[in-house]
Length: 447
Image 1 (spheres, rainbow, N blue to C red):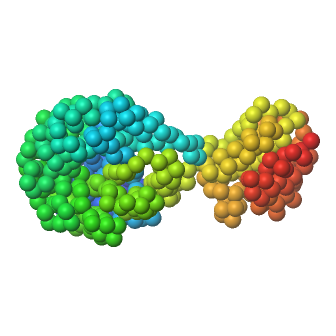
Image 2 (image 1 turned 60 degrees about the vertical axis):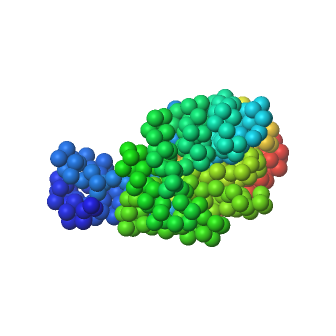
Image 3 (image 1 turned 45 degrees about the horizontal axis):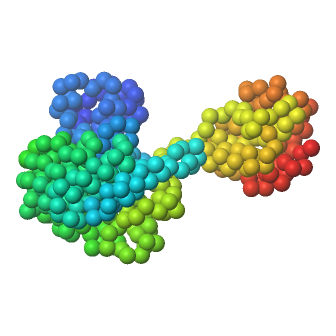
């Protein structure tokens, strides 16, 4: 049973050391009780207290691992309803459905296509998670061969295996890689599926169509049978039902500590024939609250949109993605090459550096530490001013790299020109374009 904040406080060291990030042990205890902090954040808690607090400190949504190795997927362990409360932690996995009715050659080729898809965004490589192989044939031998072909094509990526019959599921699991996610156990077959899961050491999807009470019964049964790693599939009838059920599950797990539904959620877009609406539904699942999302088709355009959305949703809103401050070479700049300055907000850096590179004009790009904020935001917050820029010029040796004494300011902060000239005596401060897209035209007139 969950402990109250005061009960937890009695087990803490009461040193008020602040090393947990909270001002007092009582404040930390209250956060623990509300599932908004982790016991591991306290460096001084005793082993006895750890054992006593084990249940209260357990994450309200269990962390479940699918697959093994570098591309294994971990989902769950979320502690907030809304991203702005803290942050979402484990991004959902995006899988593409394949069917065992497809020829083995084509199935292997599709799996390879999914596994090899990758796009770059703000310096990060984004990729799909893996494939979900469905047994539409109800033939154990055919399903096993299909899983083997998909595994060959997808390499070490995680897999979801979908079959109603436990023996068909077993045949596929024996040909898949490590820890495939097994779909699914319902009120009629949970014992057989649990036996397969324990035999191959794999997580299981608990299934109940639109009935959370029935879903909770299945998870209780699986847990009593020794299966700990569970994913929920409430089988919503449409987008509105999905939003209602997924939000209800999340609220029950976080707000009422209802352990029987404290697991990640599997979501699909099946049943929606329009590919555009499938993409919209998948986006809804990313935002609210899918952890394993199965797409019906592989479409690079849709994949790019969903991966970008996922990146945005699972970025800590209090810690913008940023690059290291410094003096960057774009192309092979010489002493006479232009020197531009910007902030260390990742999207700003890649927009500016991309346009400079596209211009074909080698240049120096000075990236000032603005705490990861964009140019205008940093300027408004006092994080990107003349003093900061002058400090970066000296700190990163811009004077020794360039023979001229000219620096190009972003057009949005033209008002800093006078102050920067005061900070950098002998330098000419030039005002560049406001938008990164206009940089190539601006640099064409540099000489």
